Image (cartoon, rainbow, N blue to C red; front, side, top):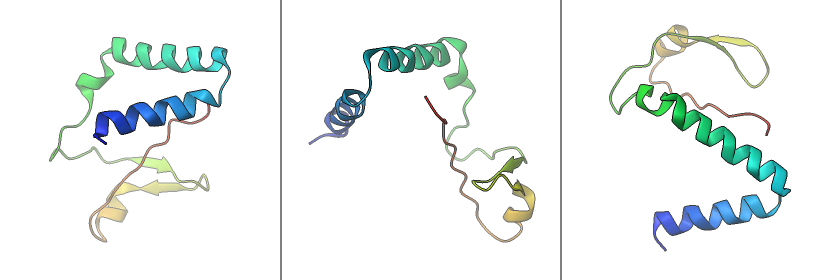
Length: 82
């Protein structure tokens, strides 16, 4: 199965467990993000992210510069609740 097919199957499975109103809200939110121009402002491969101070999963503030001093850093963002 191709990546495109895998993603379509995942979307079908995830949307199938939600009400039509929730799915509509999800689609609208994605469309608004695309229309906002946000995708054009994302970092490209190889670009460095700016220094940041962000909360972790325990709501403790984490300084990216401090973590980078210890070695490579991977940051994952979760969209949050729908």
